[in-house]
Amino acid sequence: MNIIILFQKEKNPKKGLLAAEYAMLYYLVATLILMFFTYTKLHNPESMLFGRVRILAMTFALWAVYRMLPCRFTRFCRIAAQLALLSWWYPDTYEFNRMFPNLDHLFARCEQWLFGCQPSLLFADFFSHPVFSELMDLGYACYYPLIAVVIVYFFFWRYNEFGRASYVILASFFTYYILYIAIPVAGPQYYYHAVGIEEIARGVFPDVHDWFATHQEAMKSPGYTDGFFYQMVTDAHNAGERPTAAFPSSHVGVSTILLLLLWRVGNTRRLLLWLTPFYALLCLSTVYIYAHYVIDVFGGWISAVLFFLVFYYLYPYIKD
Image (tube, rainbow, N blue to C red; front, side, top):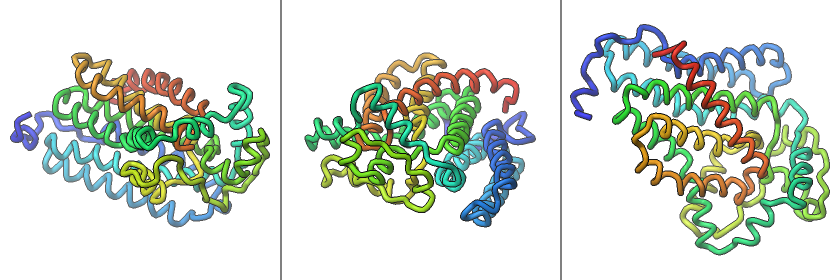
């Protein structure tokens, strides 16, 4: 794309919000309604409310900039801002689901019933070689770069589909966040630590009730602790991870949606071939590092197909 095109004034600029911004707004309103009914039970309601006010202010400020200079660059800034804010919205789900009883014991029991064991424990123990460990951590660390690559690809090489792709991605994220509020599952890294590895290995999966409302301690990630990608994943975990968002796996779900978007537009075989190995590593890594149960991965695949079909074909009704 010629750099000049980025700043050329659009002939028919969008007057209102973009479809991706509407996805954020619907989620914001839905969570505000939930806050209204649970305000006295929330731990940090004032900060949650103020955060939403700031997001609204930023969204409308970027809209105003776009209206003054309607071009591809300012449109991209609006989408990029919403994607960047996902890191704020994610821990916000914990503030809601910590009010509800934890369900990890049900998921761990289901895992035991399906496989006769806890696959994440055996997976990490059996494949403990530093090279394999680093590959797993590389896969997990590729999550946000994969999103960035696909977004940039659509913006520069499939601009006519850029609005739809960004809408599908953001709408899927916010739908996952709604599920995380409604289904309070912390994942093996938190549940195993709370119960104790010895009990888990014996097949004992007690109900921890509201333990995670006040505890955020997690197991140390397995693997090669001196590895570059191991440290990267550990640092990211320490910066923003919470005992939430285990089922279904949004890492698996969103990365699957990215590949479906590329497959749908066609003529992306080379890019798909490049991204597929990282996608496979990412799916495996979610179980390897204790972030998810295997059934979370299955849930990620199923939900990805469902979300993709719904939001891809819903887009024309709220087209940018």
